[in-house]
Length: 160
Image 1: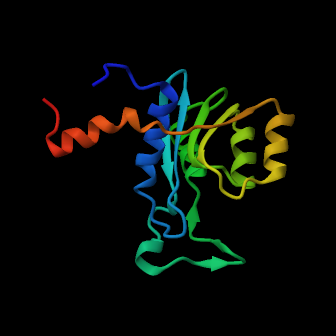
Image 2: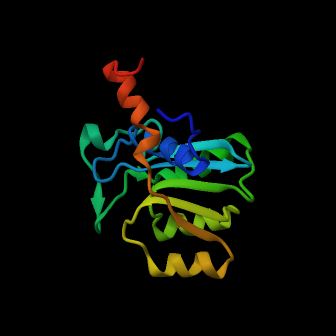
């Protein structure tokens, strides 16, 4: 067993994956972790407005191919910062799926300059061009299971 520490991109993306497990929209489970200076400042997942019914309970409210009930994970993370007065200028986001155009625009407007994502998902060409045009960057993270094997071993009692 290696004593190597998990790299930052693996660690923060794992946080986003964990958050995605709380998603309440059945169409796509997405999680997002906002990070500034190697510290998590907010997290979000796909879900309904607080106090509304959830897709998992009442089904998705789909119009023109979009679930109107759901607030995207990236937006929920940004809104958490807005609600609590946490600055986002210069922060990074780790998100399980490439952000949609609306989320990309919101992230860029909020000062996010690095977008890390796990899965391609309808990668919008205009979103990609905006990221480049505004001097931000986008990076696909591939989770390396060697950093998570210990979790499996611990759950099965294989560690000594």
